[in-house]
Amino acid sequence: MPDTGSQSVYLVDCDTDPVRIKISGKANFQNSACLKDFFQHMLGLGKVRFVLDFEKCATMDSTFLGVLAGAALEIKRKSAEGKLILFRLGDRNLELVRSLGLHRLMTVESGELPIALSSSSRALSCEGKSDLDSAKLALEAHQNLVKADESNLEKFQDVLVFLKNKVDKKS
Figure 1: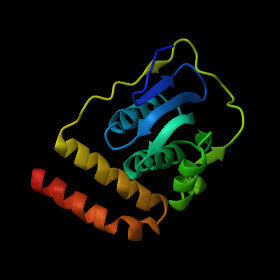
Figure 2 (figure 1 turned 90 degrees about the vertical axis):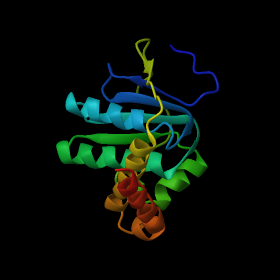
Figure 3 (figure 1 turned 180 degrees about the vertical axis):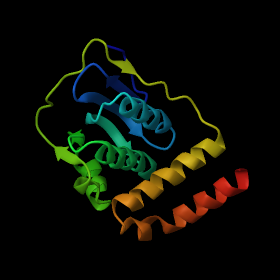
Figure 4 (figure 1 turned 135 degrees about the horizontal axis):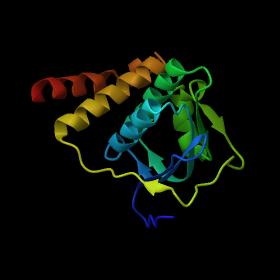
């Protein structure tokens, strides 16, 4: 298994059902693009069941949560059997998920994980994106939060306007 040290990393295991993702460090706008790409790739392969382990996740921001919301919405669109299951969130991260209404879109579990990472797990490569790509990702992520729960529009209205203006100026 790869050594992750103290850096932020997503360890993934595609050989399990559900697909296993272990989040270590900070899950945020700086490293969410690779997770979005991973979800899109797995969904393209027909994978619709995912377990995310947050035991080592220090913090998460709204862009990361919007990427999760987008994945959960796409999973539900593709398959009635699809699931995005969040394990071992911790108090603060659970509070964030609930405050955005994401617990109604994803399954939140506690206790032991149903599967462990295998020796074939790998770390996603989260290389930097351009400012425009980062702004587009953040805009889409925040739009996903509003799709997931309309009450999030009030929370993120200013962010959405700011990001839309940023994307429009750079495009």
